[in-house]
Image (cartoon, rainbow, N blue to C red; front, side):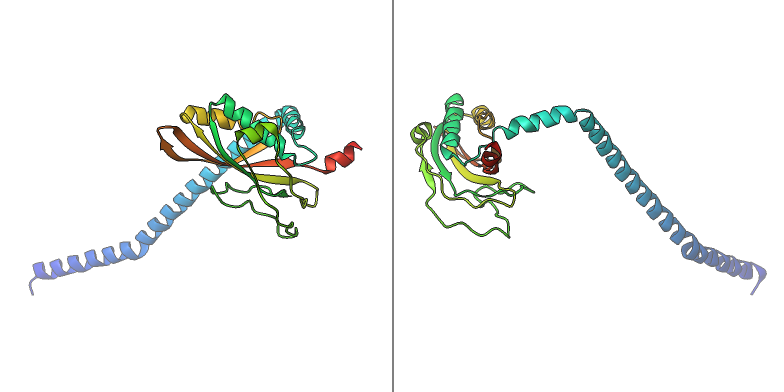
Length: 230
């Protein structure tokens, strides 16, 4: 072989060695560097989220007095007894203000209070705590707008939680003229005098009469308040 061929082969071999060295040595380092940069960006994003939360908590701490006053005001809306008739009346008042037609109101038996960790799907039963024995079954209270106003509903025996708090699940179906009226009805439920927590609100169907709105809500009671008052 002449010198040119030998030089060409030597150049190709040298180029191959350089490519192998790049693949074996440089590429893994670049991959590791990119992974490190991605992790650093993720950590920075997490830190920014934490800083935002800390800022919100600091602002909340500055307004702690106002928050405590608001909680105290809401606490006054919790009755010592379930008193479902008060809730029915409040539903009727909210319906009248929103020009809604009450189709049905179902009140389940009072159960021990359970903190809602996540929204409950419409139609799902309200979860009860595991250690609390199930109360004896009794008929649900069904009423229309007239019964709501007159307050003829009965209250079933309740099993309280360890701290005495109760919740009464309500299923409410109303027909509202439009979405604005639906919002007005939900706002009316929250105005008191009883504290009512709206768990879910679903627009079930729409017809010439308006929109059917199905609402799962909770009313609350704290029998221990009666003992404390005595």
